[in-house]
Length: 116
Length: 113
Image 1 (tube, chains in turn purple, orange):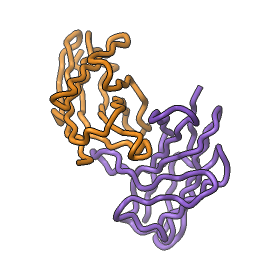
Image 2 (cartoon, each protein chain N blue to C red):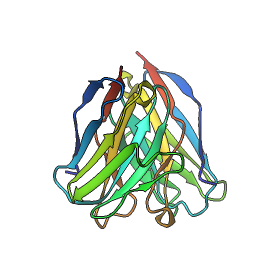
Image 3 (cartoon, chains in turn red, green):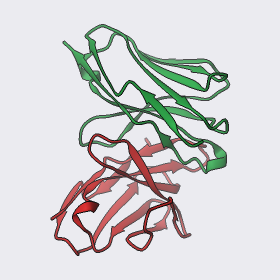
Image 4 (spheres, rainbow over the protein chains, first blue to last red):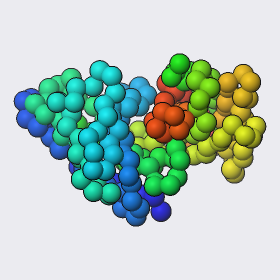
């Protein structure tokens, strides 16, 4: 149980285009999902917290107009990287928190974004 | 106050040995301390977690030791195997921070056969 999927697993796009990454909780409802970014050989950095039906809360320094997050249902959150640039190339990982389970998060497999 | 410091940055252990990774935190409001294992190109997977009401938790070959007064916790991997070679992250969170996880810097573990 507690499986989180991401789609796509990898994507290559041209500079200036937008890319959407989906995060789904497959066998549970997730009232809260989190989006992280991880650069090579580095730790995970929280970008934003996404709550179903409400606006995402962004961490300091994360541009909310560039990284659009939508949490339209209890099993789906999307991250759209708008006007992507090479410096946005990274490993994007989502996680989902089970409703009623304090603290515990389950992570997706990640999406490798490469912007040319 | 939100930092979690992890050491060592890298660790090489012989097969069958004990791997020990340490973390220290500052925020006394943290009340959940998980360890994650991450293989290259994959998302992190929860290994084991502890709450501050116990000083030790063991699951199979993995043990967390927790020292509340020192604000430190560590992961011990007994009988380390080559398949354990991965990056390990400690993390911490608390209800007051909305369950947001603060991660350590990571430890790259290599277990030699």
